[in-house]
Length: 584
Image (cartoon, rainbow, N blue to C red; front, side, top):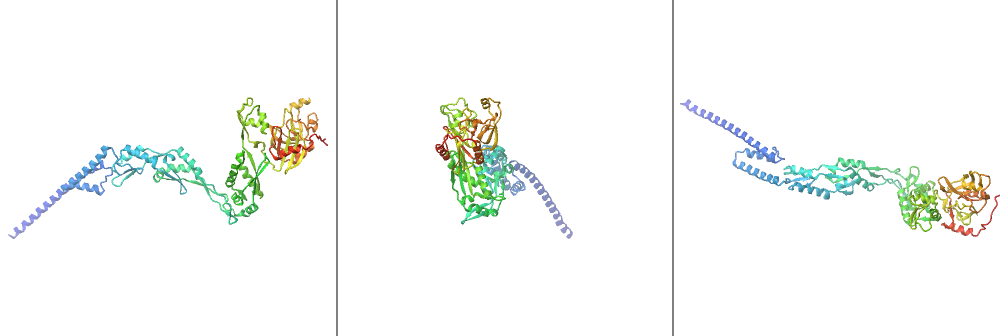
């Protein structure tokens, strides 16, 4: 009895264990079937949701819902899938870009590719401005196209469409593929060169509190175009994304940073004031320019071995004076003026004379004009006028025709000597030489004969030769001798007739037959263009008139331009021009 009672419960326990084991196997099979079902959902979601990741919580939840045996869970999953399918189908059928998609920062979600293309182009052409900066400061703003940048907005819109649901929920930005036009970028950079350029500041001086103090040198810069182009091509994406392009520069270092070693020299140069004058050698006119110590101090800088000219500051002064002079056809040559100031600094002589130059000017042809007559009226040899007008037919001038008279400066290539001037009157055949406004020499001369006349005009002494040579077929024929060279004593050239042949002052002319031209003292037009004096007087003039001395030759065709020229004619009228001295 006891043994039977004990055996029944044991069998029931074994049966229940078997049932529990069978249930566990059925549940494992159901789970496996659920995983297969979930795998099919993975494929579905991956097809319509490019950003789908089965490891994410949301997608795992969907998989769990499908694997769940709960009807409510499966219904919920089915509704969610239907909503997603509707959402995706709606955008696919409408051909629109999914939400939360950006192209180059422009929101293109829910737009068609065509609309997105237009929005991108509008942003690129009108809204996108890039700051161009130098040393951290904005120089200007530029549109991408000005920098030579371009995009393919069609490809960018297509990329946004292909992004699908990748922008949900966090959003996605599609970056453009950019190209650079080397020539357009280089053109803009060349235009910016001047704005970027900062000249280095050489150590100098300025007045402060009534005394001269030193100013240290500062570095300058200029645009590095080659490196700018390289950086533009290398960092195009970042430049557009951050809307900033930092231009690289090359530093410009001053020669001297400390001007204190030459402070005493600057004080001495400035202490009594600097005198600056302009000299017109044609009018024999001296003009004073106003410049105080404060202004002059800014013209000075420290060189390696002494004071030097700060060209930029001095050039500003010259430019301001030229504005006043240009109305009269005159100007100061900046480079020559800088050289003159440097010479004054080297010599420690604060008295500076700057030459006034002349601009070319037009001339209108009048009745009976020829090139030769125009030259004599203008005081410029015809050959120089002809060379300045290579297209003019000088044999057929027309009244009212305009020709160009070259700058008169071509006649005075040397530095003029302000305190000496020689006046020659072709009418009276007389010469008067002035020094410091006073008559130094006065005597009769012989100028060029009718078929080889001396040119009137304003010239200067260019050469000195104690003995020179010349020849003329006409002269030799007149004398009935062989055409040979003749000798001229104390020759000083004043202008070139043709290349290699000069007219000028001289003394006696020794002919090939041993005789002297004109007997050596005639006061009538006898020479072949030169101005002849008695030999002893020619020697005096030769020794006195240094290179650069101005010569003003006047006639009934060319009136005096200087006060000394006008005074010389009055003076000549008081002397006995018939007096004929004999050579001793």
